[in-house]
Image 1 (cartoon, one colour):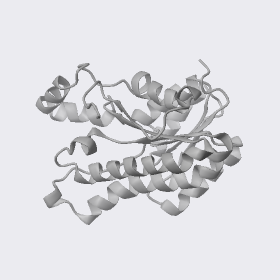
Image 2 (image 1 turned 180 degrees about the vertical axis):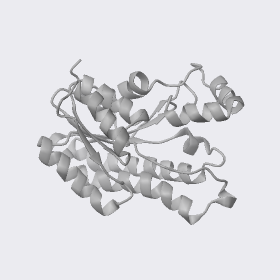
Image 3 (image 1 turned 90 degrees about the vertical axis):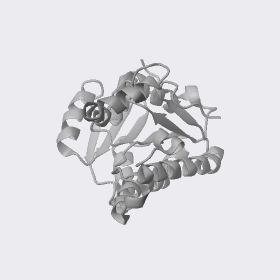
Amino acid sequence: MSRLQGKTAIITGAAGGIGKGMAMAFVKEGAKVAIIDLNEELGNQTIKDLQEYQPESLFIQANLAEHDKLASIVKEVADKFGKIDILVNNAHASRMASIADTTQKELDLSFNTGFYPTFYLMQAALPYLKETQGKIINFASGAGINGDVNQGTYAAAKEAIRGITRVAANEFGPFGINVNIISPIAKSPGMLQWAEEQPEYYQNMLAKIPLRRLGELESDIGRTAVFLASEDSDYITGQTIMVDGGSIKLR
């Protein structure tokens, strides 16, 4: 298991959930991983799990909404490991509300934690990724592709991320950098909490997934991220990869 041997990765929002699943999959493939997260307690727990496989794993506690500090995070990782091969922009926070009831505060939360960090981290990592002909993995959502109700701020930011991913694929491609999107349905803590609170809606959603299950954080989402971070995906860029059990079939 060494598809990422010698590679260095940054993964945001990786103290738990999908981010942790990807980080675990990466270190098991030999990567050195820096996880970035606001939750210090969870981050410290996760880094212990990662260090069982990769002792050089790094946790940086940071608020990604503080955009002026993002470039220094990238530099800190590059200084520690000597290079950056992979950037995974996974972190995102939002609140549900109808468009009619959405406030500026809710719009700002979604864009400040999702779209802007994705944009600025790609910008900051670009010089390092040019040197390694690296990979960028961003995250979208079926909420944006389908236009799910009460998800206006989340959907808008996610679709903005898809837009800049396509632009980045065109601009960064000549440097040998691949830029792709994962759009998942996964067994994340938030999803499981929602299933518990809204069992009827959850069962309806599950019934619409052809494979009739949620994606596993590490073996489904994490392994797809490993593929996109490895040389196996060298001729794939600008794409949205639906890791959702067949729920959405893009044309």
